[in-house]
Length: 415
Ligand SMILES: [Ca+2]
Ligand SMILES: [Ca+2]
Ligand SMILES: [Ca+2]
Image (cartoon, rainbow, N blue to C red):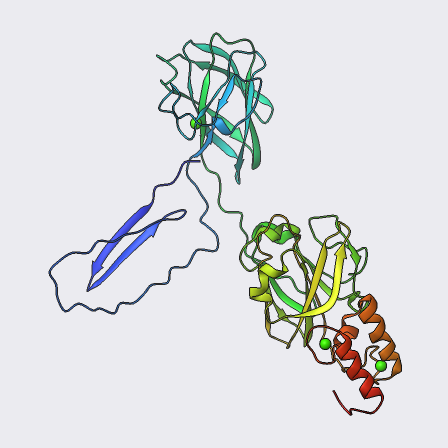
């Protein structure tokens, strides 16, 4: 697509120099100052430019390069036209359609508004060619008349008005018979009213414990939801068929944020919500990325129980307590392709009595049995794990069992 030129304006007013740059993409700015003034301020106000959350809708002419077309039965696709004997092409190269009667190319033009558009083909040929048909959305528009140039670097343009529907439109060029010479296709341009932005304001998603969930990853926000029937066999994502293969027994039915797995590619905070009550929030993080996203998980603690998925991904479960009305930021999953996005669960805030693994209100020999089993076989209950971690070091180990034993024997009165 053609690059819109930057718009740079400057003003010098009352000692303030303001430079305004409207530009799409990264940019280096260097300002050279000169003059003989003295006594100027050495401390200046630093501006803090903010990246817009979403770029303005691009309204200009759109250009589709031949070297990026879908193609069949062509002569050659020249993806890098440098150092060929053809010059003055645009983009990276061009496509040699060849002379076959079965040669064809295709590209897709998207518009948010239906209407009439001016379609302009940039091509070169060394004979007049009248054997190529233009199709829009499967309907033949006409047989193009392509007058020859002096050579293949003598690019010509022809234009047609075409009707496009809202959404995706298939543009094709198909040979209807053998051509007298190859036709080189540089690109086509489409100009017209593409409509405006279809970006709608972000609608918060509301649950009971999870309120005002805002998903920043707009491309995938439609696949996020709040859900309650979570457990073994329930869907993990809004955009995959993957289910939970193992799940902590005490979190079955927890209020859940079913995320979009594709949000794993989003490298800023995925979202934010407000606690609707005093809650304990859990996040199940792919063990392959857990190390890399500690920046926002730093104040969450390992819940001691892992979760697994039907496609054999293991998730580490982290938790933290949040007071009613507090905001919870859901950070990035790291932007790694080879990973699964996290899920989030909320339950009414847990009250852990250290040593009371079965949550029956007293610490006795049954809890000791569960603690021993847990150390041997692992835990499937995050409350039991937390209660068994007597010294709160994030692990349940022999030293915790010793303390529990001493308590049961009356050797210590409290943990
Ligand atoms: Ca080109
Ligand atoms: Ca107990
Ligand atoms: Ca411990």
